[in-house]
Amino acid sequence: MAILVTGSAGFIGSNFVLDWLAGSDEPVINLDKLTYAGNLENLASLKDNPNHIFVHGDIGDVKLVSELLEKYQPRAVVNFAAESHVDRSIHGPEDFIQTNILGTFHLLEAVRAYWQKLPSPVHGGRIEGITKADFRFLHVSTDEVYGSLTKDEPAFTETHRYEPNSPYSASKASSDHLVRAWHHTYGLPVLTTNCSNNYGPYHFPEKLIPLLIVNALAGKSLPVYGDGQQIRDWLYVKDHCSAIRCVLEKGKLGEVYNVGGWNEKANLDIVHIVCDLLDELRPMGVVSGEVVSGESEVVSGESKIVSGESEVVSGESEVVSGESKIVSGKSEVVSGQTRHFPLSTDHFPLSTDHSPLSTDHSPLSTDHSPLSTYRSLITFVTDRPGHDRRYAIDARKIERELGWKPAETFETGIRKTVQWYLDNQDWVNNVLSGNYRQWVEKQYGK
Ligand code: NAD
Ligand code: TYD
Image (cartoon, rainbow, N blue to C red; front, side):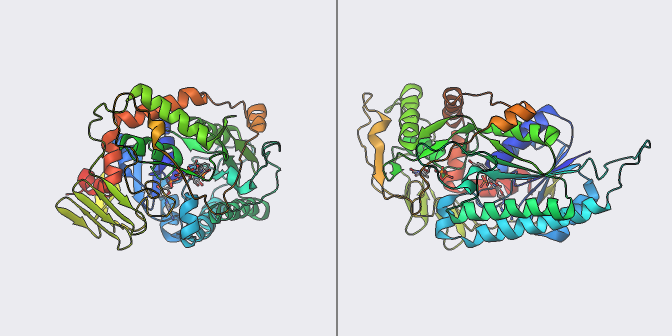
């Protein structure tokens, strides 16, 4: 048997695949379009693992997905693939409609055709391989589809009405509805998870927590939107992955499971916690190795990142890094072999107004004396339009019915996360410089 996982070069998907293959010999077919958020470097440790089969492609490509399903006969499809950043969705909603809605629709159609052809279980008899009854389609979604809570409202349960407020959450809500309808209308065996904000290793530094760590280490401002009192419910990414494995194994068909860490925190508190951890683990003024520091500059209005010797110009879809310039790349990796595909450089990170590093172009703090604290870098900036005030997940159903609970507290998870970023500065530098886009060629190409 095998599973097909989409979007698994991204943050949560790559953690999921790494965890899956650490605990199982069951092969993973990894389908990812490698947008700006897809980073095969996240999966570098699987390079020689024959159970990891990477395929470069779009969930909206029905022909490709159908071929993969026919070829590998997976017992499950886990759909992580999405455009996932709220700020980007505000600046450019079209990709969100394209992947999150139309992509999910096409994926569902390819999966439905595959599933309908699977043999039905024969009473008392044996069928080799996967049957219709064994198959699962698990759709990974977000708590943001439920909208925003006031300070005193109870946390989101699975029956909370959908009230998405951003283009991102509206597109995810649409995909959830499609998945639901494909179950009710066609009988497709689906499961949906709606999870709260994740944090942990391999998190792209356009999102709050990795942005704080990366900016702080570079001596840059830590942008806090509005008054910083917006509340999110944080879950360590490995706990999200264990919840998905649990739902895949034990979830009831057609059901929705909310996943959360019972960790509601205001953004400003998160900023303080990260600053204090960095003060402890990497005090200011201590040389921090290779992390991009004084030489780097990010100018969001012009979508231009200058980092050391490399320059990235996102609007023009061009990456210039050191001596090499990539406009289109060449290799696709299937089972460690090399094929050809375009390595597009569009949507380069950090190009939106509110994105990290974009709200302050001057170094805020030049005081790197040992007595300084990273809190001195905090800067309040213009609020995000339509900013949801509070998310909170009621995760009692998944605990009661499936026995899942998070393993990490926020305190243990955030410490691991900060330490991971300190220990993986090459990964950070490759993301900031754009060099991660060359990973496929460097690692697998000729
Ligand atoms: P991410 O942006 O880090 O990764 C998304 C991945 O999907 C990337 O590797 C990208 O290349 C790939 N992708 C994008 N469009 C694609 C397409 N058309 N076809 C194939 N691959 C495509 O996102 P993430 O944070 O890892 O989130 C994964 C999923 O989990 C998303 O569906 C998101 O809505 C959901 N989710 C995220 C969070 C969170 O806090 N990050 C919380 C709850 C739910
Ligand atoms: P983010 O990580 O983008 O996740 P989401 O918008 O999906 O919740 O943002 C988390 C919270 O942090 C959100 O309330 C917006 C806020 N935020 C900032 O205050 N500053 C920032 O630079 C970023 C990226 C986010």
